[in-house]
Length: 120
Image: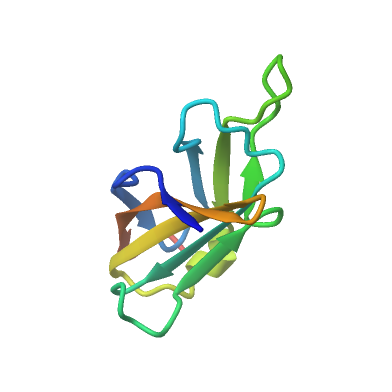
């Protein structure tokens, strides 16, 4: 079963000579991400076959430190500069899926502008 949580992730502009570090909240208020697997893909368009970047828990998506009640209510996408260098400048789209207890939650999608880094 797939559940739609939100329509859009924030648009973001990143450089292809630096780390991608972005913290996002859980798409459903109070949703504890602790037992979840999160996945994100970056493509030129939704129809594009080639994946330009990919992130997933626990390596490239990290869950936030637990709140006082033990829940984890946000996550951070972490793609190192080394991987970002392989992405050409341009406009892209990404979405995030959250898998929890046999269900897939669509956390949203958003545009990503990759700009050409100057300092190398």
